[in-house]
Image (cartoon, rainbow, N blue to C red; front, side):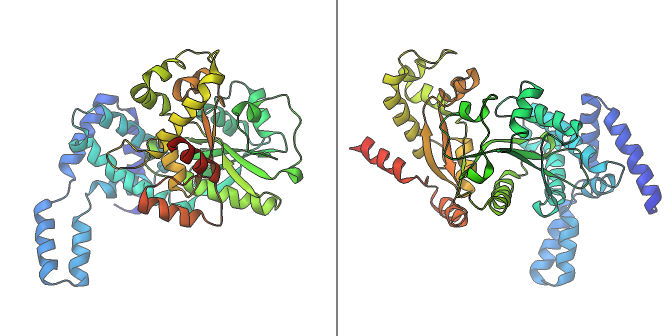
Length: 390
């Protein structure tokens, strides 16, 4: 069909898909997978031909045959009105179907999801994304989404949001896509301070004296939230942190230190297996009465959790650690009793950590981590490790 007709068909088809319930969508996915899949026989023949005659034409034939025809369907749907955001929502629904499948790796939905995910990964290449500051003057419809999507430290009220956005020593940045201008993809909240904080309460308290950015030496990334479930598996956070750090350094040359204040979501599960008696002391919703006496054992166990992998692939146990270390940061500081909220106690016994980004060596750190899988430690933590071994 012509370009105009194709857009009309795309709009009509997307509307019909969006009207389907879960069972109807599953049936449609099975039909698409059966009707528009790769012709494996033709692809195998083309590969054999390329093996004997490796020319440009043979390679182009392989590339054409190796792509399922449903990929072209998604490309055309992307041209419909708000097609990009609607395909992101469709992938979110697809993943629900995949996760419910008894054999998700081999399901029709998983194959369709992989194809759509590959297209979205190209369309959401970091080079296409727009970095925007979020502040108290940002339109309310976007601020509402910041509240809704905050995944690390819940924003309980508009006053709490104002405390994170309005003061001159608090910043927030988000990535947007040109085709989704009112939908943040990921955002990071930043505190400008004169020290490396050891407690989330220091950062989130509402009644406090704001620090002049001119007096700040440290940028603290204390919350990073992905916003779009339909873009799962497409990484934005590593680009976001580095971009924001560069922006802040240009804006405030006095900033010399870039750190996170990060949760440790897997610690209590690990501790329940490795040191159940110690884990039991932190099982309640309240901070233990004898917390001071428990600190040496707890922090030593946490250091083991970070530096001794139990995973078959050898990567660090903690998912947040894998992200920041893989992004070129080092594990700077372990903070006991840093988050005494029920969520903080439940996932990490109240412990949080700082990862430090040295912008001059993050790429070298990134390469070293991916070559060795070794956790890079600050001098203070290296000393603590030696003391624990002696």
